[in-house]
Length: 186
Image 1 (cartoon, rainbow, N blue to C red):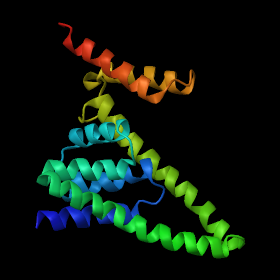
Image 2 (cartoon, one colour; image 1 turned 30 degrees about the vertical axis):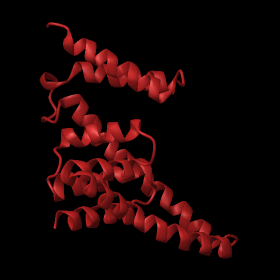
Image 3 (cartoon, rainbow, N blue to C red; image 1 turned 180 degrees about the vertical axis):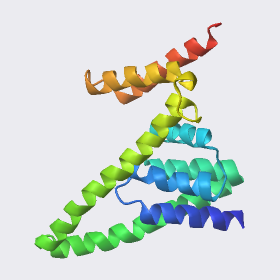
Image 4 (tube, one colour; image 1 turned 90 degrees about the horizontal axis):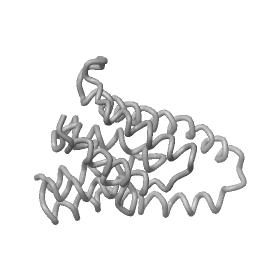
């Protein structure tokens, strides 16, 4: 039964994750945190971090991670297959249709209308994770602000946007800095 739940959950993620990458985060969160309580919100945030650090798409990495966590290696295989099956089918069909009708203006208009929707999905997921980082999953209040997490966010944002640092180097640097700061006696 758990294999079927994993397959169907990640089949939905794979089927409805238009925009890929960050746009899949709300869908994954809904499946693994809210619908099936396989992970807590904190564990989900860790999952997204790990999924970004490992090669491959976030959705596939998340499916593999959740599958292993819930049902071992067979669970990882089933969840990953659920996630990639819709893409295999849809990409094959879309490639055929796009090659045949790529010069039609209606198709170009449909594609341009999807861009704002994808941006809103990314923004919503990003704000949820930012609130978790800033307030440790508690009700927003100045007294519960995680100042180390907030500082790490600001430093990473500046390094990535202003100085165009390598994202992997930035994550490693911030992770090491947070480890040192958390190990220091307060």
